[in-house]
Amino acid sequence: MTGTPNPSVSPPPYKRRARNYLLDPRFQLKYTGLLVLVALFLSGVLGTQLWFTHKAVISQSQHAVEQGRETVRRGQKTVEESKKVSEVVAMNIAREYADNPELAKLFNADTDKHNKELAAEQMRLQEDAKALESQAAYLAVQQQKTLWVLVGGLAILVVAIALAGIVFTHKIAGPVFKMSGLLRKVGQGQLRIDSGLRKGDELVEFFETFRKMVDRLRERHIDTMERLEQAIQSLEQSDVAADKLAPLKALHDEMASRLDS
Image (cartoon, rainbow, N blue to C red; front, top):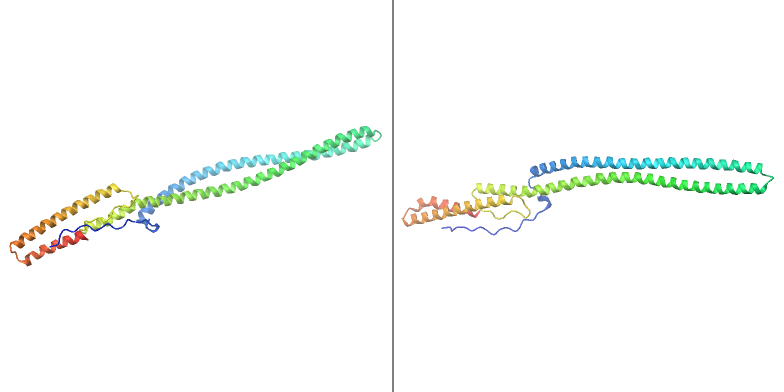
């Protein structure tokens, strides 16, 4: 008579692989898609707000640059007019004070000083104009960079949330997938759980409750087998015909095979 079978040795630990993360594509992609939609909505709102804020700052900066340009243009125009006035004054001095060279020399010295100041002012204005042009170009580049950084950052955020959603749902889909297979086996009379959940999986308490239920069913199954075996032995001792015991022995063997499977 076949004895009570023992559970086999548990298989080696399950190793996660990238291709195994979509155990239940319909379930996982559904909820990952919902997470991505929420992420896209929030990213769109946040990105739009940041973009308009940045655009307002850039617009104010560009307005300040334009005002600076206008100031430089007016300053250059004033310098040009001052140079023309200085030239006219120099011509008048040369004509009116031709017979008084000392006074003409004094006026010319003052005119030269004024011309040097105008030249220095014109140079400063030209440098300011170059600085403003550089600032305007820098603002344009920064605006373009900010746009790309904003779009790229939000895209990375959405992708990261999608991957996190797949990983998170995998920790739920994995136990559900495993328990679905175990339930089918229990329905076929196979009362053995060879391995537990993987490290990091969710639904641990639910799985442990299910495991305890299967263990109790297995114990009851073993008890029934032992009682059946005792009944068969008792009948054999009572000289019952072997052909009449055959169905009971077949039932016992079938129960043992299910316990081993």
